Length: 309
Ligand SMILES: N[C@H](C(=O)O)[C@H](O)COP(=O)(O)O
Image (tube, protein in one colour):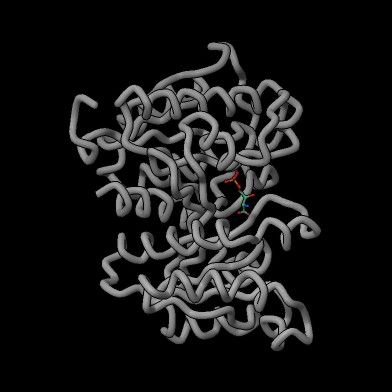
C-alpha cells in the first residue's frame, strides 16, 4: 500500500440504485461535511455527476453511462450496476486506493437475477478479498457477533462446532478490544432453550459448546459458559457483557433490530479490509422521496472510521 491506511479514502457503494442507498448517501454527505473529502462514492454516472456538483465528493462511475436511475423501480440492470460497484470497491481496497467499504443496501432477489451466487454481501467480499468472514453488528447499546448466519436453521447444530465457536469468540474479543475494552466480557448464547437446561432440552451445550468455551476461557477470563439466549441481551443492556455471541442469525438479530434498528451497523470482520453496512434493506417504497432515515448509514460510516482509525 502506498499510503497509511487511515489516510486512504472510504469507498461507498450505491447499493441498488432503485433503493434508498442513493438517498441516505446524499443525506450523510449533507450532514457530515468531512465525509465529502474522505469518501469516494461508486454508482451510476448521471447520479454521481449531480452528487458531485451538490456535495463535491469524489466519485467513480460504474455501469452503462446511459443508465437511467429510477427510484422505486428495481431492475436487473440496476442490480448488476450495484454488483459492479461492490466489485470496484473490493478491487480498489486491494489496489491500495481505499481503506474500507461502506456498502449501500442491495436486494438479494434482484441480485440473484444477475447470476449473483452469494448469500449476501458478506460472502461476496469474503470471496473477493479472501479470509474467513464473521458477521457482526455494532449498535449503540448492543454489540453482537453471529457464530452462524446465512444458513437454514436445520443446519445450525452441525455447523456450531468447536472451531466455529472459537472463531466467533475470538472475533467478539477482538471487537471489544478495538473499542478499548481492556478485559472483554463476552456472553455466549446457548443453542437450545434455557441453554439446554442441563441436557433436558438439548445436549449441544454439554457435549460441544461448553467444553470449547472452557478451553477458551483459559486465555479469556471474561468469557461466559452457554447462557440462555432469551435473557443474555437483557444482561448486555444492563452492562454485564461487552459483546454477545449468538448461535444463529435470528437469535442475535431479533434482539438487536428490536432495540436498535435505525442505529445498528452490519460489520464484516475477519477479512483483510473492513466492510460496514446499514442494517436495513433497499426500502424501494421510500426511494427518491427524501424520507429514508440516514441514521443507520451514518452509523455505518462512523463504525468504519472507528475500526480503521
Ligand atoms: N443478515 C443481514 C441482516 O439481517 O441484516 C443481511 O441479510 C445483510 O447481509 P449481507 O451484509 O451479507 O448482505
